[in-house]
Image (cartoon, rainbow, N blue to C red; front, side, top):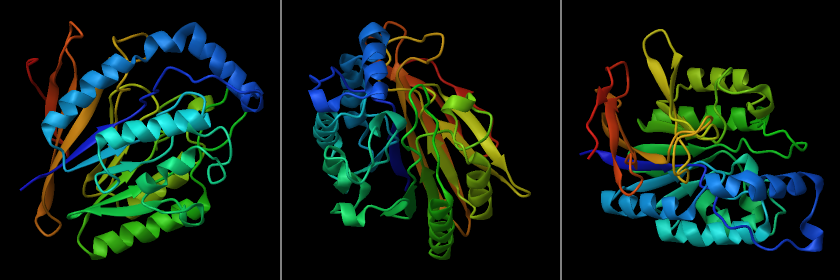
Length: 308
């Protein structure tokens, strides 16, 4: 029997709350201006609602959210995002990692992101440590935090040595238990998948850790596009899959239309895992959510399906 995992990313929930005097800084000022001038048209709550209604009909066993729930990291945005996460399900059913738009202050001390702790599978700030490890049956979800404070105009990320070391330990421990190892982060984990100002600064080190583990599947967001890449090993490939934003009403120059992913994972480490990816997103008329494509991961040719 397959386990069904849903993956959403880059929700960018709006509208923005009213900013107070102490909320302003240079980076938030630029982000606020960008939202008012452009991004409020790009990311639409009604599109998110359409995808969420479809997701609820799919009866996924667990939902994975890879960051950028907010726009300029305001505490009230975080609290609104926590209420939205409650619509997805309880923390036992949902796992979250932050994105660069969610982190405009120190992660642990931020008063708003405290409302997300349960979705990091911890109780208090003292317990917050990435990567976290959470089991969904015979699948181990390992959540990395690539979101760090950056200068205005910079959306890059970093994992850091400590997270890489803990990731290596988590992958080994999960392998010893014969678990399927799924790693989630916000930024694309491989070099060259985005511009330098938006890239993961230590992608080479992370890729080496993922290959040594090895991981079975790596998922990410950030680029607002469906992306299919892989880490090449001697005997197999580790799929690296990026999802589009789930709030974009129509494809644009830099973005795909809204969609989300469902992974059907079955099998066992002794006999090999079988993974199928189903992409679901907006139909051409933007009024319904349909199956966009479905294909097996691991070298099997992609099989396009008709909309509907």
